[in-house]
Length: 270
Ligand code: IPD
Ligand code: CA
Ligand code: CA
Image (cartoon, rainbow, N blue to C red; front, side, top):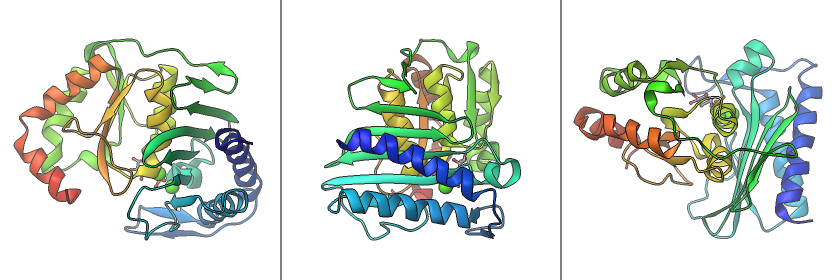
């Protein structure tokens, strides 16, 4: 079985693991701050993914949010970038609206993207240059709508800073309206379905965006950082994704915001 088909089966199995595991008691801890939560289910699901991938493909490497691959500093060979639960706050508070996200790269080039909405049992998937699908249905190509006629998504809590608020607030004001769903992977899935036209984040990790970037890339959506640069596979970055028209509209807002650019580059240690 090739990596793509194995990945599709694996992510659904991991989703079943989460569904079963969450019915039993689990511990909730905080990480970098009291609102940055992690549960036993995040950790056990990452371990499940790691073990299955290693068993099938011993030479593949895995980078996961909960600690696997922390020492990886190059992108040679096959790398799986996994977020065992994207939307942990939703997982803890709502028991839904979270997803498993996987991006697979070969020598730093995209190979396939997978997002599994466990509770809806919806699998979003794409193999590079072969189209993107929701379960068995092909997803439609991006439509070019301007910002003024579009719903956009962001994480409001992250942009409530002196250095970030001006451009972000102006973009929000220029849009039709703003949504915040609490899972970057599911927001990419909504972009893929055409339910929102853009998403904007000041800080994400590769496990938050690689699966979604590959899937939406197949549909003509563009994803860069606030400068218009390609996103890294290692490290953190800002993420702006949308149809080509809205993506360029949004970058225009950032162009002359020197305060944001300085803050951004220090923040991500570029
Ligand atoms: C978070 C979600 C959220 C985004 C945060 C991420 P996590 O991931 O994707 O939507 O705004 O920046 O950290 O911690 O739930 O895996
Ligand atoms: Ca995440
Ligand atoms: Ca996570």
